[in-house]
Length: 358
Image (cartoon, rainbow, N blue to C red; front, side, top):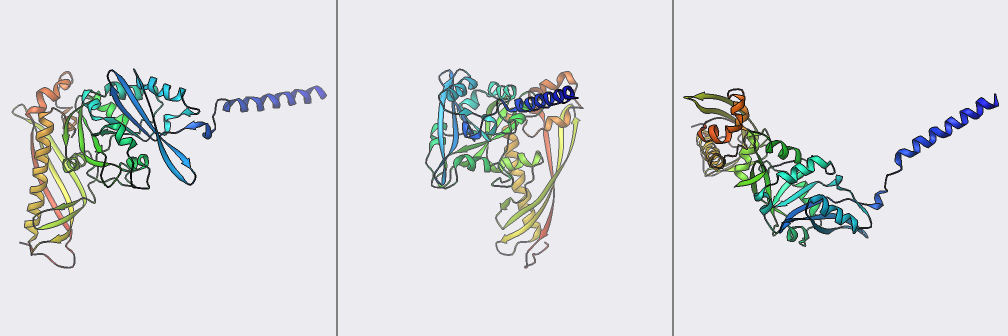
């Protein structure tokens, strides 16, 4: 009986030891550095990596920037970790800023590295910095909001995101690099005079490299095509200002005389905010449709010339093109594409003052 009891005690002790070994390599949060923003640029043939880390100073949070260079991003981060008293944990990075000159040279190796090593969340947002990235990250700001949090909130729908701001995560960029029929737009930011950063438009990315720049208004069309709601966007015309409360699109893709042709029906629901004089409903709708048409034509002209399909139009022709020819979509089919826009707009609310119907 005593031997059985002794054996049970031994087994219970071993069980406790096994459960305790699961945390042997855990480090206390006080022994870890948790950067929010990573900046990437190049010096000669080496990457320069900058990390913004929050540090508690009495009752306020300050951001400290640390940087190193290396032949690879991993080597630069390893140098940063080697010279710090705490372990650098990249899993909490929310935004990766890449300097424009690096984006124009190509980001394929950078994005592939992030996908491969798994140290950074693949849901982290990527943005292109139109300034010297060292100055952007180290610039003093008048706001009490840390720049790292400010940049992150730029892309969060429950914070500061607006429908004319592009959003791109690491996995989405990686997918576009290896897609024959779908490219992507990445937000373009710089230091602002009255805020930590200013949104200046979007960088058009083809095969991992920046090939064109589009405006915020053109980005709105890009977001709409990619099923991002334009709700909340105010459009100002000659005779009225309207608020877009919902939008949807329907597409019909086909080949006409061996050339790709697509008809797009744009459905808008708007609210009248202000008017000049006493314009009719038809005049307001005509001005709105003209404004959006001109904006789309400007966008489509840029991306078609750059052979960058950020609208994902090629996705709608995948079943109509032989699989062996899909890799030639951008060069052979896309430049010949013709688009036909059709509008259907409903005015949901005219305010307390009724408008003339004609």
